[in-house]
Amino acid sequence: MTSQRVSTQPISEEMLARFHELSPEHQQQVFDFVEFLAQRQASSTENDVTEREPKPSKRRVLGQHKGMGWIREDFNDPLPDEFWLGKEGKGISSL
Image 1 (cartoon, one colour):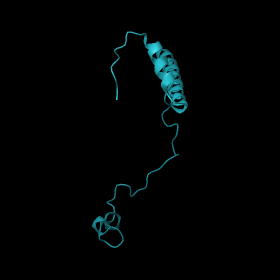
Image 2 (image 1 turned 60 degrees about the horizontal axis):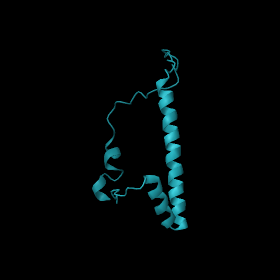
Image 3 (image 1 turned 90 degrees about the vertical axis):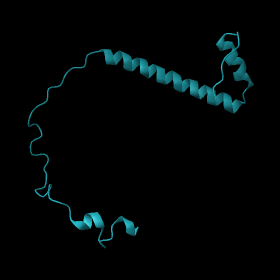
Image 4 (image 1 turned 60 degrees about the vertical axis):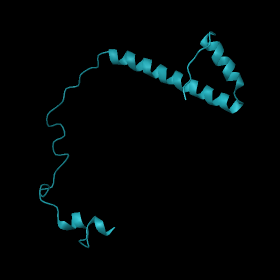
């Protein structure tokens, strides 16, 4: 749905002329989209600036969360057939 530009007018004048041909509802949509693009460009510019700044490195502390989690002793045991086949033992094909 893209059209190639063949006009010799500056693009801003051509855009403004086409904008005035739109219904008020479509003009509002265009305005909203332009606002969206401006915000995205501003946040993109901010991200570019912050990415260039070196981030302070945080040292990891070994054992800092020791005892805060656990794994059951039967973690590696095979799962029962009921898990794979369902309670009736027919599997997925019974759906």
